[in-house]
Length: 118
Image (cartoon, rainbow, N blue to C red; front, side, top):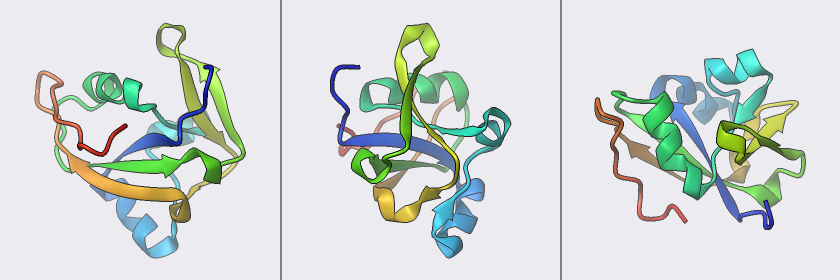
C-alpha cells in the first residue's frame, strides 16, 4: 500500500444497515463481529469482494467512507496478500460516509458498481 485512498467501501445488507440510520453508527455485518473488526475494500477490491462474498444477494448497500475520518484504520494483508482496510474498536460513524448506493449481485457474482466508485 503506497498511498491511502480518499475513499474505502463497506458492503452491508439493507437489514444490517437499517438500525444505523437511527443510531448514527454502523456496527457491521455478522462477519465483522466474528472477526473483531469492520471489513472494508478499496475501489480496486470492491467487485471481487462482492463476487466472492455476496453472490446472489440483492438490495445491498455500498457505503463510501472517507479514510481521513477514520484515524484508527489499519491496513492488513488478506486475500492474495492484498492490503485491506480494517476498523478495530468500534462502530463506523455515519458522519464518515460520503455517499451510499444500492447494488445487486447476480447468481454468478456479477454486478454493476456505482459510477462514483473511484
